[in-house]
Image 1: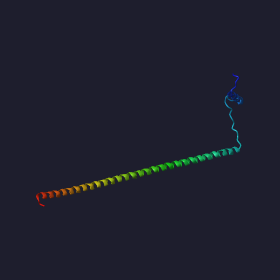
Image 2 (image 1 turned 90 degrees about the vertical axis):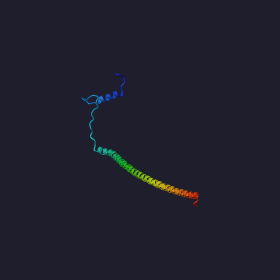
Image 3 (image 1 turned 45 degrees about the vertical axis):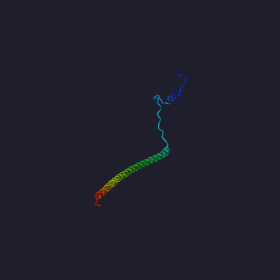
Image 4 (image 1 turned 135 degrees about the vertical axis):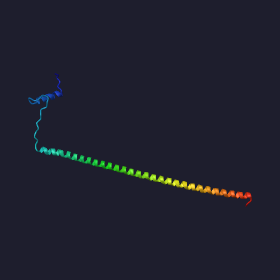
Length: 142
C-alpha cells in the first residue's frame, strides 16, 4: 500500500468506522427518520406558499397565453374568411365589368357597322346621281 492516502481512502475509512456491527461494509448506515416538532409543518407550509403562489401565477400566465393564442387563431381565421369574401367580391366585380366591356364593345361594333352601311348607301346614291348626271350631259338631255 502506498504511503499516500487519497480523499476517497479517507472517506472510505470514515464510513467503515461509522458502520454499525453486522451491517454490510461499503454501504452507508441507514438513517432513521427523526420526529419533527409541530412547528415544522408550519415552516413547510410557509415554504410551500411562495411555490404555490408561483405555480398559480404560472398557471394563470399559461391560461392567458392559451386564451390569447385562441383569440389570435380565431382572428386569423376571421381575416382569412374576410379576405376570401373580398376576393370573391372582387372576382365577381371584375367578371361583371368584363361582361359590360364586351357588351359595350359589341354595341360599338354594331353602331360602326351601321355607320359603314349608311356611308356605303350614301356613296352608292351619290355615284348613281353622278352617273345619271353624266349620262344626261352626254346625251344632251340637260
